[in-house]
Length: 78
Image (cartoon, rainbow, N blue to C red; front, side, top):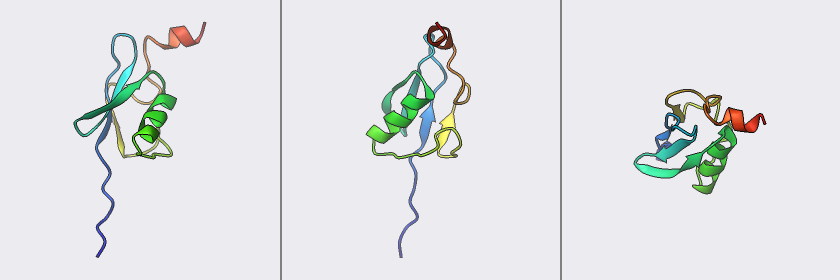
């Protein structure tokens, strides 16, 4: 009998002072994201394909959701 596929515990951590957010899977740091699209790319490079990073229960967003990138929005609006 096949075992159900278990998803790793993926966490997008609270924003750092510069607005970037660390992305981890269990105890492993996968990368640093500066935008929600970076989260998708970091997961893809780790062979963790998540098609909707904003709407999935697989990702735990800490310190704000996928739209919270404080400190970086001022740089993107210039």
